[in-house]
Length: 296
Image 1 (tube, rainbow, N blue to C red):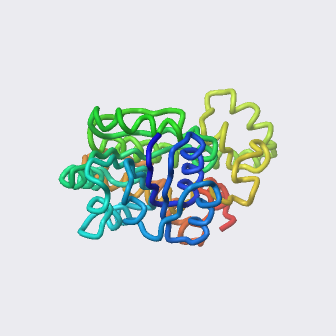
Image 2 (image 1 turned 135 degrees about the vertical axis):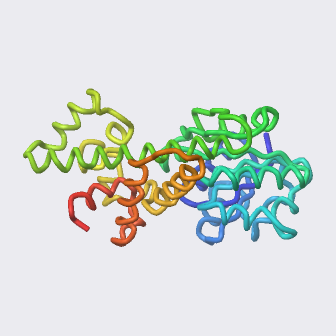
Image 3 (image 1 turned 30 degrees about the horizontal axis):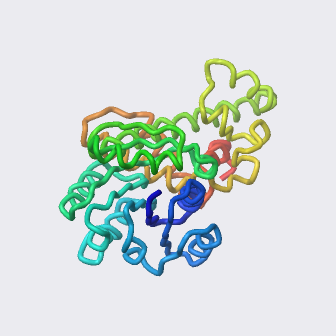
């Protein structure tokens, strides 16, 4: 079992640490929120007073932070965790960041004598809690081989997408498709309501027909059909709309740089920007159904 430092004990990170602990790993964690650090200690982990203190004796360091700027601020520089961790540590970044930043961080980690993989995840808080996350991993074969046992304690599907940055690329493509699908499903349920078709009836039919997808079958944005979906708890995240908008903006920047045409991705970005401007960015991204219905 490994000595693991975990930086970022938020909605995703905290349940991930619980699964690492359940697998027998020793986990020391840090988060800016006192309550999150206390929750880790209550679960059997060790709460550190700083990120650098958390990694002081680590063999593996997992980061799960909101954006690239946060990962860079924690990792880089003389006071960063690349410098503070024992030489030869394995870094696993589970944040969703842009490809260029993922490659920059991997190069910096290697220069400091470490190995690193970019390993963004999919599955939401439910997947983090159940240990059924999907990890999309970018890095060398050797680094992936070392990271896999740790990731298997937190997830069900572990994919080696390719070299450094490939995990980040897979994640932004995935989330762009997810955002588009959620908007499509939301429009379908809003139209059904206007036509007098009950949400449950549409769900029963479409979840077994050609419109079936995760956004419909597992995370239905209409209240009722999927009891575990955020729609049944006033769209408490889950996966916040603010994070979806961040991922879409990363995808659109990547598309522009790569010369890829993504008109639906661009439209989805505009729609989630409107959700943000309506003050709903803290709600689950499936709450876009209310925006599209004219409720905000």
